Structures are given as C-alpha cells and as structure tokens.
Image (tube, rainbow, N blue to C red; front, side, top):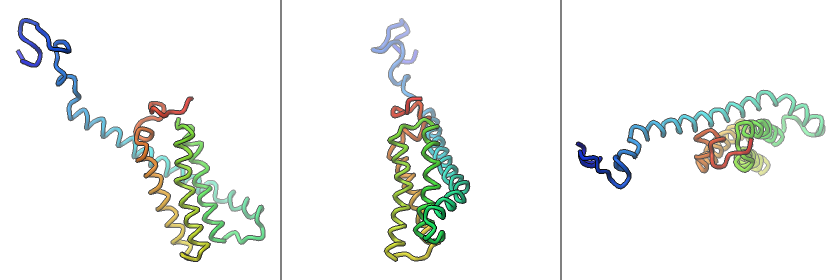
Length: 173
C-alpha cells in the first residue's frame, strides 16, 4: 500500500487515512483556478470599458446640451469643457454599474477617482497651455484613465477577480 496513507493494517497518519499531500490542490487545479480568476478579472475590465464607452456615446449629446444651456457664454467646443464632459459621461454610468454588480462604495469611488483625476490632469495641461492639441489631450485622457482603472483593479484583486458578492469587501444587496 502507498506509504503516505498508513500501513495495510489500517493505521492512519495525523489527519486520518490521507496525508496533507493528498489534501493539497494539484498544480493543474491551481492553474485552472488562476485562469478562471484571470478571465474574470479581464472580463470585469472589459465590462467597465464598454460601460465607459456606452456612457460617452449615449450621454454626449445630452451633456453638450446641458453645458450649452448652463454656460451659454462658453464655446461648446472649448477644450476644457469638452474634456470635462468626456470625463463625466464616462464616469457617471460607471458608478451605478459597479453598484449593480455588487461593489461597495469605497471601490466604486476609487474607480470613479481613477476616471476623474486623469480628466482633471489633462484639463490642467490644456489650461496651462502645456499641450494645446485637442486630439492629443483626448488621447492622453483615455490612455491615463484606462491605466488608472487597471491600477485600481490590481490594487484590489479580490474585488475584481471574482463576483463582488463573493468578495470579502462585497456590498450588501
């Protein structure tokens, strides 16, 4: 009989008839769990990008009309206003989406900050005339925003690698 399980007479080791080696998950099982967590993490990131793009597409016209009505003296194509609108239209849908997916307020607001701070940064670059090319400012805003969102997710892998309801930091439903 296998010497890890005791003798043929039925004697057992310290944890019963099987050793701790038998209880440990195989490397194949660990890879499978790791792959599932990675897929879940990537899926969550893609979902957030889709929500962000949908928000930008669906809210662009209402946001433009709102800012035109509120600040009629400001040109609607003003780079500062455009960058602020873009940041808002991407961030605002993310908040209810994350709450609906079961995230607590803290991670939700961290993600919102990861989206708002890059917008404020490029607005500062525009206002100080450091960068004056609008397409470059918009591109920079998106690149930094996507990187910041990824950084927030990496900082809380348990929040974004499983269903939030299973996370130790899950929001009450």
